[in-house]
Amino acid sequence: MYAYIQERTNVHMQFNLRSVLSWRFSVARPALSKSEMEVARLLWEIGPATVREIHERLSADRDATFATVQTYLRRIEAKGYATSTIQGRVRTYSASAKPRTVIRDTVCDLVDRLFGGESLPLVRHLLEQKNIDSEGLQEIRRLIEKMDESRSK
Amino acid sequence: MYAYIQERTNVHMQFNLRSVLSWRFSVARPALSKSEMEVARLLWEIGPATVREIHERLSADRDATFATVQTYLRRIEAKGYATSTIQGRVRTYSASAKPRTVIRDTVCDLVDRLFGGESLPLVRHLLEQKNIDSEGLQEIRRLIEKMDESRSK
DNA sequence: AATATAAGCGTACATACGTACGTATGACAA
DNA sequence: TTGTCATACGTACGTATGTACGCTTATATT
Image 1 (tube, rainbow over the protein chains, first blue to last red):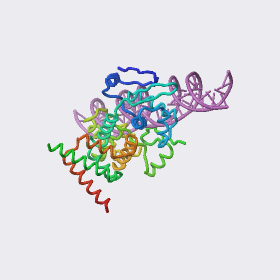
Image 2: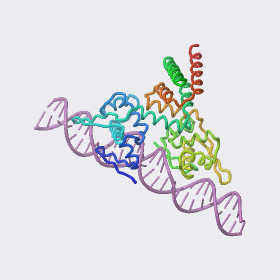
Image 3: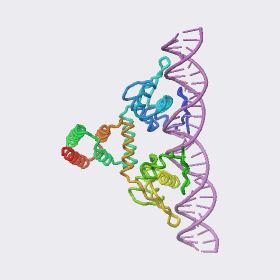
Image 4: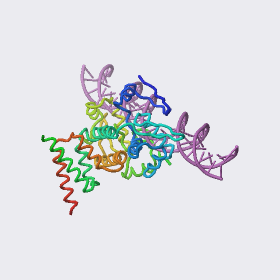
């Protein structure tokens, strides 16, 4: 039971019909790959953007050709995480999924697989890596205070 | 410039020569896939284990055949995260990479891609998901205390 | 108007991953 | 000793992913 999707993007992808349907009702989408996630983050960060803009931002860290970034964006759209419109010769992509959602799903998955569902060990790890500055620690402290309060009530 | 690896496992994999070399010197290995990570976690959890044992554990959550788990383990070994010995008819795998290392690499990668290198937002996210109990919060608080101390010195 | 630039779009290709079948063979039961 | 069962191991196959070429065409430049 498969459906074949071939929209404007002409990215050939097969999805299980179920996942297509649930995606149409924005319940779940095929997960983003690592590279796609990076691009998606930039999309959230700088808002609607052209391929060029994303490519420039991305080139700061990684090294991928324009065409590669183009493919990432096409696939991101095909998976339902973004939409695009074309103005003149230039296509502009904008995120259609909320970062919150993607982060939740991704992190949940990681926690499940790497920590058996326990998130505390991950927090522990992050704190011990000590790449969080004093202000960060301060904020975490405040967060915990607040949670404690709302919990004891 | 590629090297072709084909050990006992006969899993056909191509690695960039650089990564093969650095792996031989235990500096870096090809990353584990999501499923492989799940299996690796079980390996750490229950120590050296047979395919059957891992399969049983895994079947509790997921649903994969014996042969599938076998393939995961073969690939995990091929990537250098485990070794195996055979006793009679039964092959036993044991992890050869430390969880600490794998966790560090995996989490770093995630933080880079999804949060642009900032780990604070991830911590924030994890705390807000409030699936950490009071004891957990307590421990985090203690951790922060300790870090604050060692930092102010 | 002719030409150069840059972007879209289709397409490609090697490798990775999820998943599992089938066959051979060793271990154990009857 | 012969049959049953479990396991290893080779292999396979569809899809995903990383990466990018090349053709076409709209836009900008001379």
